[in-house]
Image (tube, rainbow, N blue to C red):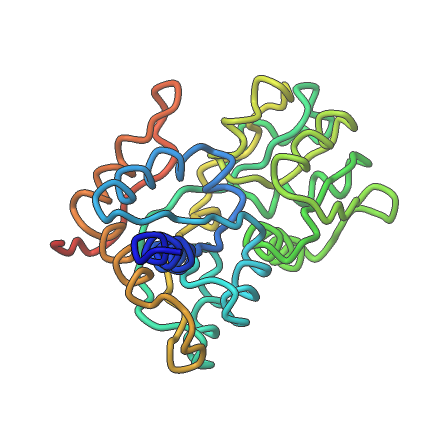
Length: 269
């Protein structure tokens, strides 16, 4: 085998490693993926930085677990108490606010609980529990699931067994299930907008300040997991919170509706 052939074989052998170094692993919520937001955001970042962002879309609890185990480099989630604990326990660093959207109560157009037009989410939950209607819960320890359970706790009630269904599924699947069973559910507005046409569910309760839904981005701590791509994670965080990244969030308007609102303290990049 001649010297040139050896050079070619050596370059092929190291190609996977070189490509792997360009990958940033991101765990995030189903809402950022299913809404189409990431498809709107990431190509611009990838083109600018010559990287590839590998997205794992799950509930917030699972997204943080993946980050805790060092299975990803960075996480984008919406459960502030869990995020703060993740950082305080030493698993994450460089947390930044990125954006926010809001939760809504969606349900059948017939609205047997008669909650339509209300702005008090706790009052609505009480009415749903008393009505005999079904409620579909994510049941997956996602940010939405955690928020929903906090509302039931504040309401001091919950639908009877058989009418409260813990699905253990993502938001899109839960919306589909709610449509099939003519049930109520708590959802983020972005995923609802994506599934509205296929489910026929109506927005019944919105506008309560307790339904505000902020998102944060956190790098996995390289001191805890030396093998993570911290440089790539930091680059993604810096871009998402830069003027360019924040503007990309603002311009994500499917069907003319703004689903996410930029909230970072803008940095330069």
